[in-house]
Image (cartoon, rainbow, N blue to C red; front, side):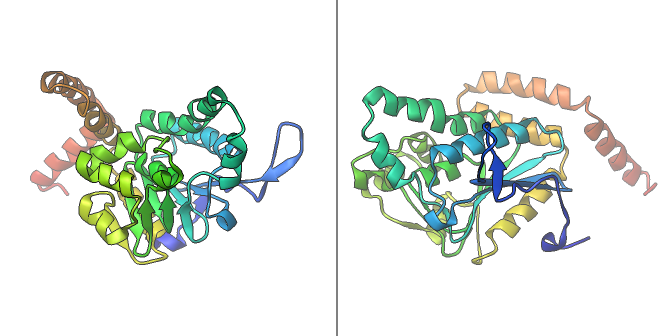
Length: 285
């Protein structure tokens, strides 16, 4: 079997320029590719700006997420950043321009545009892994928390820097972070904006794993490949059960599990696994 770095890629990697509706070309702010194992990789692509997101980046990213969600060939998704950063949050120049808008226009920017990413990922029933290759700040950290799993490079750091600008996390951080680390620790991180190292992130449950610098993407692909090799409907059912279970009483959760388990027993993957197990017991393989 080929090593991760040697595996051929298929699908598409967005070129440096992509066409717009009026026929003009614009820079691809999110690169997209998928490999033969069904792993789709999305790379935020403003390395000179530490991948700080703009409206244009969100507008390119959202349809790619929808495409990956609907593509039966895609079994897992990886999000990472180009260059030295994962994502530095919102673009400062764009934020300064939005400050000129009225309150309703600023709300609509978040609700109708930025929040499409969180709401789309919330409906995903495929695994999503953040390969945090460098610094993540503000909305960049919130975007990492929208993912199911996080692999961090050893020198990567996280910080909820909104308070330094007199703001609060507007992209879902106040939803995700307390669920991961608890309310007291989340409030401390929000109120102080202190930098969290990769080592601490792993210790408090923000990172699943810390790897050497330059290895976050390769490690994420290997993990995604392991997950993608599992029976796909069971993988999706686990994700639904875990997240829905956070909002359900036990009786309702168990009722849901009885339905999911009954459905999974009808899948070809389950039947093949049972037959393989029985064959091994009979000494046929």
